[in-house]
Amino acid sequence: MSPAQASSAQAVGAPALETVTPARSSWLGFGRLLRAEWTKIRSVQSTLWSLLAFVVVAIGFSTLVASVISHDWNTPGNHPNHLRLVTDPTAVIFGAGLGLGQLAICVLGAIVMTSEYTTGTIRASLLAVPTRIPMLSAKALVFAIIDFVVSAVTVFAVFFITTAILRSHVSITLGQPGVTRALIGAILYLTVLGLFAMSIGGLIRHTAGAIAIVIATVIVVPPLVGLIPGTIANHVHGYLPTVAGELAAQTSQQSGDVLSPWQGFGVFCLWTVVLLAAAGWLLVRRDA
Amino acid sequence: MAEAAGLIEAHELTKRFGDTLAVDHLSFTVEPGRVTGFLGPNGAGKSTTMRLICGLDRPQGGTATIGGLAYRQLVRPLRTVGALLEARSMHPGRSARNHLLFLAETQGFPARRVDEVLDLSGLRAVAGKRVGGFSLGMTQRLGIAAAMLGDPRVLLLDEPGNGLDPEGIRWVRNFMKQLAAEGRTVFVSSHLMSEMAVTADHLIVIGRGRLIAAASTQEFIQRSSERSVLVRTPDPARLGELIRGAGGTIQQEESPDGVASLVVTGLPAPRIGELAAAASVVLHELTPRLPSLEEAFMELTADSVEYGDRHVPASGDRHVPAGGDGRPGGRSAR
Image 1 (tube, rainbow over the protein chains, first blue to last red):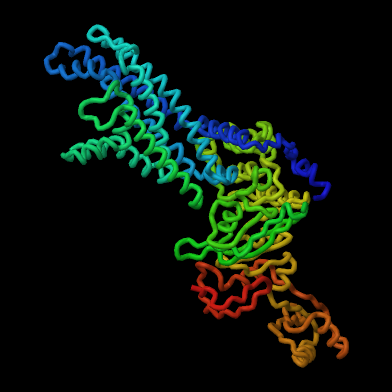
Image 2 (cartoon, chains in turn brown, orange; image 1 turned 120 degrees about the vertical axis):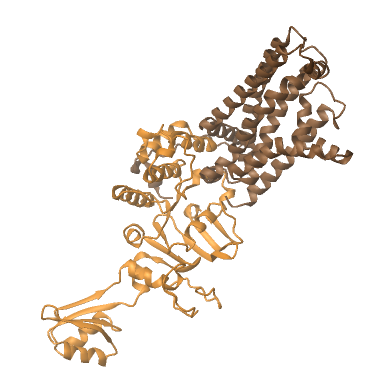
């Protein structure tokens, strides 16, 4: 081109972009996308508020439930909790707080994806990454890492706070069979849950719709399916995404469970992988 | 090869949304080194065409390439193409700087490049503010800053003047001319003829997703309408006779200041001058008149206005100055 081209942008007040690292390596390229997705997710307030809601609700509600159990320890009606705390302590510890707090993860997961569409950012994103799938992969990985770290902190905090509250009645330690595995399971469950919500956000593309579907899948559908009698319904219920996934947070397989903790987690991962793949497939095919 | 690097080529582009054919076998070329205006009435398919070029929409048929490559094949696309599409393509809760920063990071540009384009677009002072509080004009400037991040050789700007005040419009106009003068490809859509008349060197006019004309701005004005000649003479009767005798038509006749003015079509100005000289008729003025771009545009797109108030029957054999396709049974004017 014309020699003027080289110093071109100077004339309009913008220094020409110096040739930056002619990075051809696709790994280096993916690293750039990870940075970009990190910038995206940290630069909007919904991320902070959702994560804060998760941590506060999870820890707060767990503390409340443990305190009530502890306070009413000698009340006759409290016996089922005693039994459960012995057979599957983490299910009791996590059941309440994480069960409620996980909804914030669901909301954040959905928003991470739908906000691209509702705000129009998707156009800027895809102009920069026209092959699209690397953008989705980077977003999923960055969100999963954030989700994992925050969940790890929260799960351990919930564990130590609640066990401290219950110490005078029952001793629960990381050394007991299945307890450490259940903690890791809970962290992984919450991580995959975020990706599960994100994939639905990618499929639905509207915030309200995506959140409604995720919440329905997580807390509305399972108890309704559970109402249907019979072994077939019982198996269907057991293979529902979060019903299966939550098993990972148990110390051991309980009598009514169709799957073992890791099997359940595997089923949940399978759901998530299939939905993410569908979201990726549609991302490439649909107009942005 | 270097010349082809900034070339935009659309070949038989076709995009359908449900029953609506938004872009209909559209072919054109946009060359580097000049501002190419992309004109058409609202709903003509300008934005869709730009989205097709950028790979945001998938065409049902045809191809769009930039320097011979489809947008998706560009390794670091912002290095080659800067696009300002819809103004609101940014998260309202994110600051201007962070919007530019994540875009820069996807391409591996240094963070200081963000400051450079912030300065360029005059947004440095509000860089840390959330985009949600921006006026449309500021949003537009941010979009232009984003387009300039990669110092691209091709710029696609969809209605860049939207929401800008007169000073901002002038800034964008000079900016585009400057970029074109530097050898870049500048492809800018607009429905404002007056703006394109002073900005664009070349025009691509579409209506109902189809090419109506592709020509230089000058050529466009000259070809698109029958030219008329204004003649002023103290002897209109004699001159009128001569003109009619030579095959010309007198469109109107008036004499506001005592000297009669005739608007003549069908004869070029030199021929009228010769006729008058031969018959010794005095002429006070002999001026070839060009229609304004606005008029030319209205005439060209009259029967391709999507929501126009006039319903021209689909005659199918309307003369089009350039690039008109001869395909029979084109879509009716409905």
